[in-house]
Image (cartoon, rainbow, N blue to C red; front, side, top):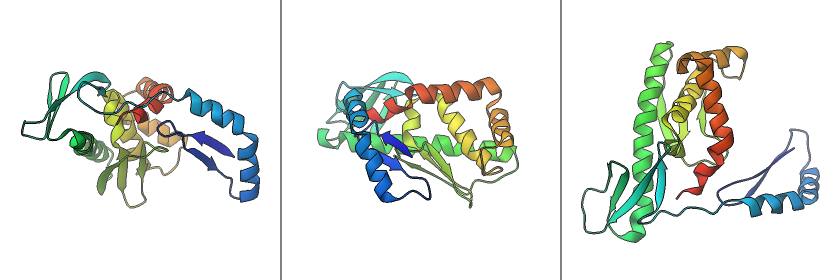
Amino acid sequence: MLLRVMPRDGAVILVLPTRASLKSGQQFVTEQVDWIMARQEERPESQPWRDGAVLPLYGAPHIIRHRPSGRGGVWLEQDEIHVTGRSEHLPRRLRDWLKRRAREEFGATAHDMAASIGVQVRRVTVRDTQSRWGSCSAHGNLSFSWRLLLAPPAIGRYLVAHEVAHLKHMDHSVAFWSLCARLLGSEQDLRSARAWLRRHGAALHLHG
């Protein structure tokens, strides 16, 4: 059994083995109440988006600037992200902008990587998932968390390589990881990206 406390909202997720009963799962959760409460208390505070807040776009701090009378939606200007419109709409506008940007950037990288190994990406979507950073369907559809845009560029590139490699190997075999490393350029790049996600990935869910 696998028990997780999600970093963004403290929700508890229990993953049961195929043959495990719901009753045994409930008992396991009951036995782990102290652990669950400790993990929930350790969660850092979320970082709401508002004027003056800091957002780590591409892993670098960017200040959110609200422009209530401005036009043009959202734009990037050096280390500032400008958002126009009413303040209550700022989070939605910024989130939509990040999703579009993530879809364009991850999509372009995915198509380039896929072409380099002779496979084809059918469609690229972005979502806000808590349990997985990306996915690949048997039909060639790739999906990524837009929150990867908040990490250093090498991290998003790793996730794209990971899902593109699944177009050839729908497993996590030695051949799969070897292809991931080849798409990224080196084994070291692969190890570094995976280590970064293990250390810092949960913090990406605290924004917004």
